[in-house]
Image 1 (tube, one colour):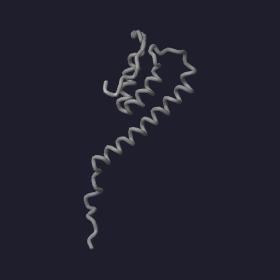
Image 2: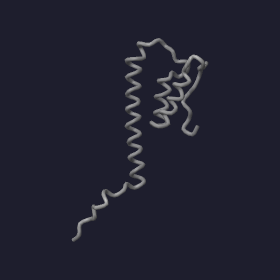
Image 3: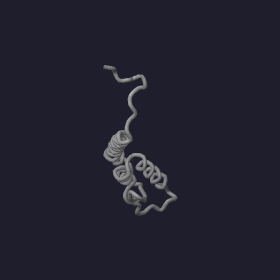
Image 4: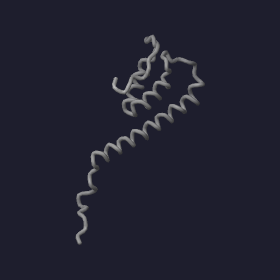
Length: 101
């Protein structure tokens, strides 16, 4: 009986295995981002004067972006939103875009 050839290293992950791994990593990163946002909202935000020019607030927007779009797109949407939250922008209603926007 011959032993399996292990000289080439571990077998490559099947495409579904890669997708599952990517999805698990995304969920973990989203959970971490939501934890950081929760700490910000409970600890830091109450110490600062209200300054967000948008509805929903930037932290609410970030939470929605991560929950709806996952880590990478949620981060991109959040960074874009934070860049717009400045004195030269009038602000207003700015909801998180839908999944196919």
